[in-house]
Length: 105
Image (cartoon, rainbow, N blue to C red; front, side, top):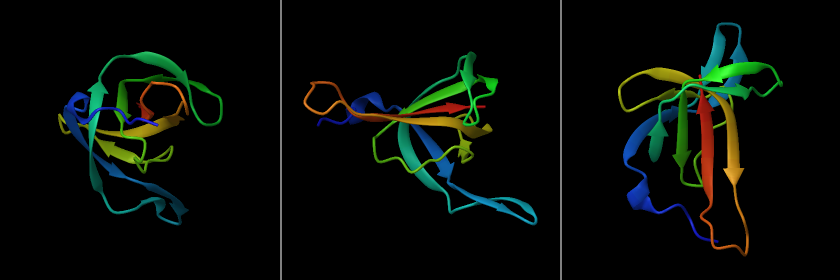
């Protein structure tokens, strides 16, 4: 299986994985940086519970990106957002690259 080519991943994002909630609100893991392709456009999507919402940024990254719905993401322009949905795209045996797609608030 091939991976999305590194030369396509022109941006760098910071991801703080969502760990759950505590008495003080959401908890996040340590921030890691990842190369990605970021498109800031407005799209209607369904979140993890099926409610219709709006995504203002979409991220394509390598298939090993550690990011779950609810994770906090810092985009290249410094804006902080939250991951609404995360999709891992694979196509074993087909000549298309594997990648992770993240829809952000």
